[in-house]
Image (cartoon, rainbow, N blue to C red; front, side):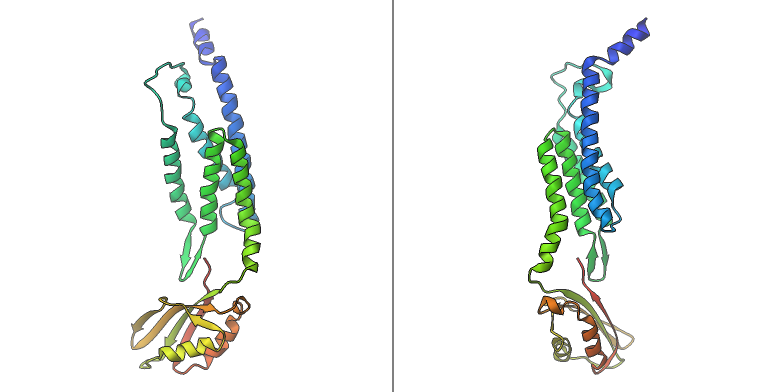
Length: 248
């Protein structure tokens, strides 16, 4: 009899309603996270629906648990001195997401990838927080805005004037001293200019290596690396070189 009384005392109406509300919030956060994650998985990113769904749902869950302290441990606590601060939970979420976002950013030479994925993971955690605190409309709007930013804004960006960048590595033959003017002239013949402050010079076994970033003077020149390649083949004193689009 005592066990039955304790059991029914644990599962009070308030506990049941709180659990139902929390479950509905978690399912809503999971759904919004899956929607955002699908956009990333559709574009072949490593972080997809599972990652985004989990981040959004867990973020909501952490905030939700701070909203029902009086029901913790199956007890009806009525202690005015016990008031947890949900902002501390939000601060912990943001800190933890920072480590996760850092893991998806990759740097290879002058190319950086994963910035958009990292920003969208940060966004989906904020969506979960909004769901957790009950701001459902704001959470839905943020989800829609994030999807719009990652899809339509990319198309708009492709239409606007820009100056595509490329990473260049030049390796000169042993004993040869290259000239800045000659390098600038070679890349200038193909519509590129050297980005200011990007040059790095190294010297190994008597050979000089230059690494720098070039900018196309027009978007239409962004895909002309083969033409720049042909130009560098005829450059005096150049023994080896490498060209790559500088993504970020």
